[in-house]
Length: 234
Image 1 (cartoon, rainbow, N blue to C red):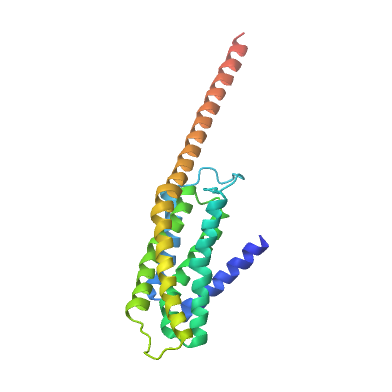
Image 2: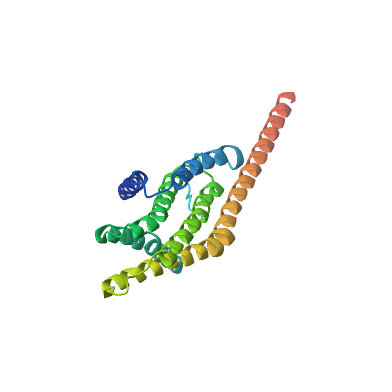
């Protein structure tokens, strides 16, 4: 829990810096606010949690070692390398690199923070928690497309560029394409066909189990009452 708190504080710091830097559009800043309100509304009216006092595991998808490696690759490609790219852009005075990658980092930081917060609250049901990465990923894909357009179409190298400048130029291009490839695969190959159905399956299974238990409890109560009445008549 301590390390999780440190991560959340770091993410809050990133979000605050990105928000006040002027590098993130008003639309991207408004998106996490809208998402938070929408998730609360879903948890209240559409998919309320069945058992808010449950102490069982709230993890929706338990993957293999290969899946955990896939997550590590995504964290490296989507978070660590773009963060290094932005910091490198600051160091090199490359404002275009900083401006093109910052919106993606801002939204990903908001997504991770939201996932960490609601995963520890029994208020949110599995479908609501599963929609967080899905909706954020959809929005970030559009942002990454803008990033690709910026580094591939709007950014050029001078004719006498040094090797380090050429390497930096292609690092930004390849990183943008790698993010689009990874998160497109993640959205269409995992979140939609696997993660979201698993969340709904668990939600409705829990609902059916609770309903069956309520019916059984009512039946037991009726039987006990009937037996008590028969004893009084005897």
